Image (cartoon, rainbow, N blue to C red):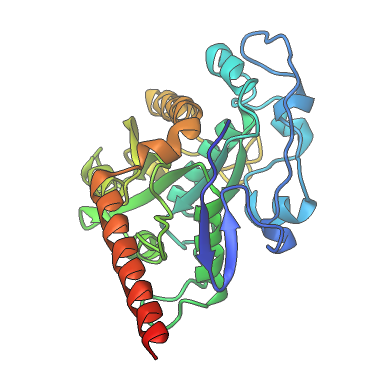
Length: 315
């Protein structure tokens, strides 16, 4: 039912379900969510709240996971998500999301907001993986085989959708975030690694609310042929929006506000759009101009082969 596309990276073929040749940290298994009765949008812990898959994946890609006693009683677990939770129960295999953030500060507010979004998507039963940009080299034409570059590209190829969150610095997205996007190619062979994937956007600001960064991110997503959801989140004065590091619910949690509600809206919308678009991802990316280009290349190759064969016969 679901279309699958593949991408060749470092002489290994990876599909949106990930190849069996990937490392343990990048492997994935399929989990079917049980049909459950939802009460106030809260699913039984076994369905969406417990850790899943290989513990190595949790350790490397799910730093947002909290101890069970917190995860089963924090603000995310209490959200009323009945309609989208019902949709989540039919989304098999699980929807897969790559989360990117744009700061390497010790207390990075874009990372904290990205973690909260990850918890909401995880609560809905999605397979969520967060990429750590630490160690990713500055974009050049040499280091395509760098482990962090390959890790990022494999995660993008694996995903059904992305969630991007960047700080706003000097009126726009940060270099840390843009560097990640620059390492994701628009075209690899005949495959477009981001085409047909969904994308949700968020930004954090140190001052008053701004939309410069999410607007720039929206342009980037459109350029990469991604389906950018209409809603977006902009968190002003981010340093006032999170609890202390040693506070309840694990610390550094987003405090109640209309901004927090908007983040939930964005995550719900990303989940819905991804569930709707995933079965259609291949067909939605089928373009006349590309079909024409392929036909012309095939015709040239056939003509060259015929000429070579004719030359062999005459000799």
